[in-house]
Image (tube, rainbow, N blue to C red; front, side, top):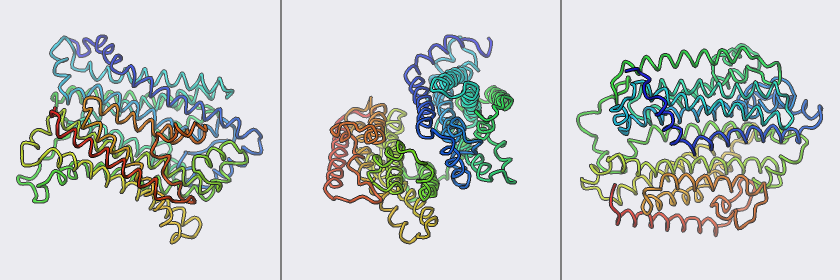
Length: 533
């Protein structure tokens, strides 16, 4: 039987499974990129305004490290700087999740055992994951090209940018295919692929920050850097796309060879056996939860520290970066709730990072459901540990971990912004408090996930992430679009103090804390009464 036997039927099945997820990914990425290009046309209408903002960006190594190198001062060049690297990372994430979902995740849950018992070849599932990722990236590239050209940007540059974003997604689809052969778990495979993606971004940042110096060659050592080297709207280097296609083909070939040489259900990287006897401190569910999730939490904290430092370094020059246009300034001041552009920018940043911390907390809580469905909870509950202590351990870890992520954001932004304005002693506690002020709202989102797990376990995963997504949309777009206050009040982040620069009222914070406690208790009560599994 051919190694690709049954690929058509399996591809149709995969497309049906992803019929909601894939359009959502493609729509969000495309609309953000198209909207950015369209908004820049209104913000920078004159040549002088574009030259001024380009000069301001080019003077700061931290600005270039965040967005990548800037080639030229046209609307298209500014658009590539603003969302080129971000679009590449978004396409990479989409591709990683697609490929891992149809390979290692299906293998881990046993679905590939059932599929493999039919007339399906050994490499068919790997091919299906790559095909779906390729189709998604092709559609994304087409939408970016058509949308940016429709809003008035040059067609050639729009095509180059769309193809560069799509090609970067293909590179990381191949990376995910190889990662799926290395780790025995979907979580491990995603971790490997995402770690390589982050490394690629950091390498690009180093090359961009060099500003043409000796380290600028790093731009050619990263798939994210290749997107910037296409130089869409500023020369359109089409041959760089061939480099991305060649890299995809090489990594896919390696993945196919690895898949053919390993056992089904096993990874090429052997799992390290644990010690014969557990440490004494592992005698509780909380200790076990910490042992399992500590590596992931460290990654979230380091990421919070990094992005806090980046956003803080930009804050001192945010006024000049926004230029003379009032549209974006007004949007930031509405989102940040301040008249001062710098304080509004920092407050808006804290809201965004609060949503990031909430994402960590939701993922930590929903680990309860994955342990339940994978039958890892039953052996634990068969010991002296009860349901409430099991669930409470993950809740404590989620809340404490979210607090650590926010503290890392405040620490990074306080140190970098304080260094820029020569006031580290004053700005560090100020921004640390501003970050931690988001914690009550984060706890409400966390408690909602706990309530869903206890009361509606079958739909808790989808509903938990939907609640977070709804809160994010309202928090980010409600003030700028001036949505009705009653709608904005749905998001707990609406009641968070707009710090730094704003006032702090105890009443909304106490209310958020009470709501969080009530929801968490309701979820724990529901878990106590329902069947496990």
